Image (tube, rainbow, N blue to C red; front, side, top):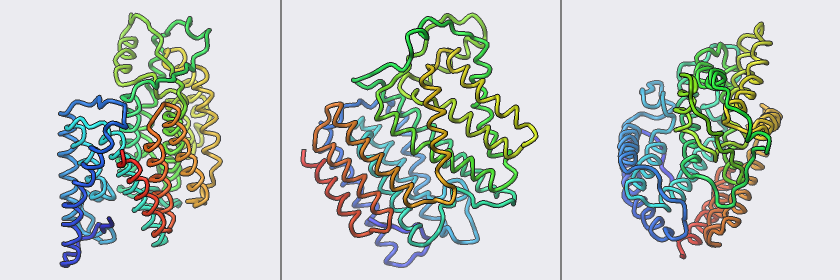
Length: 401
């Protein structure tokens, strides 16, 4: 169902909002109930976490309905932080409610598919309008607007953290393979290198504030988003894990490394996102501070080495990160590219279907997810009539359990 994020209070818009709020929840709940037996991963989040997410989603949803249109000159605070508060709030409210209900299908199937549908709606509408997604700044030598800097946190770094922790909570796949080489298992953990290993957390968070031009912030945001689109499907599709090497903490830095591991896991290791973020941040900082180019060239190499010396990643994880970054950088900047996005979306759809099949998922779930992803992709590519039909077929395939 389509709903515009507009403040126009005509009777038609009011009826559309009412239908949106009244009809959608029963559909989502019925879908989750019908497919519960098809989804194996447990809900590892505490219900209290779900209640908090649902509350924040409700607040964002309510604020979005009250806020003026995005193209208005009077930007409310909420739209300076989140460009689509209605869609974002709905996704958060749905996810939080399913966590409270401890619904496996709700958390791992219905919520991702809802997010996919909402993303397709936004992409499709913006393509038809001929606009470029404003989350990624336009190129230019002017200083970035404050809203663009905020979006780098709320629409890039925060979603990345949520997706990364979700992969960690999913745990190791049943057909697990280890990316660590035999010789690495005997290597000692060098505790002081945690100082280098932890540095990307600080540097990456500072980059949006340090960017002096829109082009610099554009590179950081665009490359980060492309990396997410590329790497997270790999985490789900390739069953490589890299267990942390066990050690006894003898120094404060060793204890810090132990504490950091509480929020990390073996599942999101190949390729190493630590190295990827270091490469993205370093390339952006070279654009900002070209005279310190040599320092920003060396820093990612040191971070890559610390991934191995802290026992957090294997050599193959580091090599895969460099390879992934090299491929992502080759995507032309002029391509808000329909073809590049279509290829990425198609590859992600195929990967998801193959992965579900190899871990023994029900064939209806495999078919349903594939059709819904294909439908969302077509829907976002201007084929407004065909996309929803694919998505509806996928929905029926998963409900007929």
